[in-house]
Amino acid sequence: MTEVRERLTDGVTLLDVRERDEWEAGHAPDALHIPLGELAGRLDELPENDEILVVCRSGGRSARATSFLNGNGWDAFNVDTGMKGWAATGNPMVSERAGTEPSVL
Image (tube, rainbow, N blue to C red; front, side, top):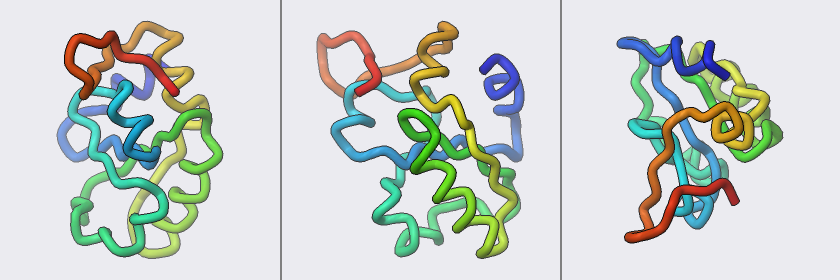
């Protein structure tokens, strides 16, 4: 998971495709949140020239999103360990819930 964090430089976007409650519980700082079910209608929010790293809870939804994005012209890669892997390796997380430690639902 360290390699994912190291890839998050200019020209790389981390896209979180989990549902709103999962996002609010805990997510990577600076990630872009577009739930998988809304992705097709919100493609205009993605940077066209960035590499996209796609994350969900454990890798299933992000694999589907990655396939969809690659089929529509983006350079997307699945973070197959998901936010569970992100959190387990001590990467930074933030919560949208005041006074609550970030967690992965």
